[in-house]
Image 1 (tube, rainbow, N blue to C red):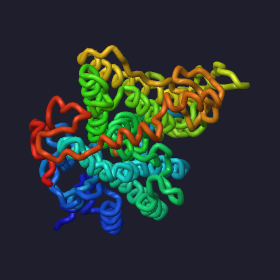
Image 2: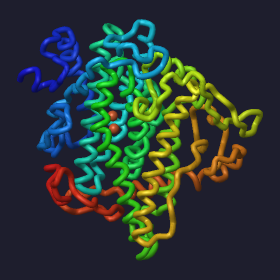
Image 3: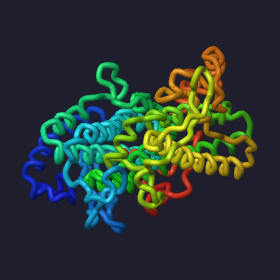
Image 4: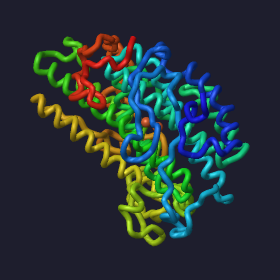
Length: 465
Ligand SMILES: [Fe+2]
Ligand SMILES: [Fe+2]
């Protein structure tokens, strides 16, 4: 097999012998990791998957049956822009960095490793889900997400191998050594150590946690370190499908629940009650908010100053790319109460990015509420306040209700079972998770999708079992 068939790429890999050797050494370790930690029980099955084979608006992806271990995890970057410039920060307007600037080397490596670590982590979190899929369509979507997260790992490992020399190679190895939820060698970020062992979790994860990924990648897609920017720009094309899976998945659960509500008691009818859906939203939304980091952050200021990590749509949405003179007002806890505080804008960029994310999530909620309305339900779902149930930043260590009011720990504990999934809730959801492997059939707790994938009908044999 030639090199391109093994590692499809647009980074001229066949010319770069050093990089080629490094990646070829890493490849068998990656495949071992995939076999050990990838989707369990389906490695030998033919799955109708898309594979990135090129960049560009038309024809970047190829759809066909493939066994997952034979998936071609390629390395694709958006084509370079002639005269690319640093788009923000202290070096605004200077030529973009084609190599890692020495003074930012550690910061940049940290950013790439932290992003890279989430990719294999999510595959690990989701590895048991295939066994309880609600339909072949959903099973295929799960595997699509999984192989693309694997490709995103490749993309990050390419940067580590290609631009960081020896310590980059060590970091690339460690990306295959940490394990989601393992107390001795956990994944770096907490949301990626949470179990994702039922499909309601999966849909909430791809809706809320992959969407954090969208905003992190978007901020890095603005980066003045051009190889990183171009890598992230291309990853975003694939990421859109992951969020689609979560967004429409939850929408379909809402639809089915609302349909069952018309017939009688949702639980007795084997559906997922809206209260449980709401608790899963509360759980995953709050953990995903943590991924943006502290509200007030000198790291965010440093990354912005260095031109490494911009704001969402930095180029299109802002005119002042220096952000030196502005302040940002945020509400934080001081002396045991909520108080407004003015922060230099550059130190508030995590919060600015989080705000963009929250707006995007609200649109998802509006879509689900539209589904509920269509089915004649008067109940509505909502996002909890961003202060609720936080473990990172200004609100960690304090307790809030769903509206964001500061409350005592005792009061939080009293209401916790109304706000967050209980063990019983999780067990109940799990009790509904029986696999449906028949072509064109679907589990009782979820509605079928409005359409299939890439023009195929819902009753297509998306996975050959
Ligand atoms: Fe990803
Ligand atoms: Fe993703």
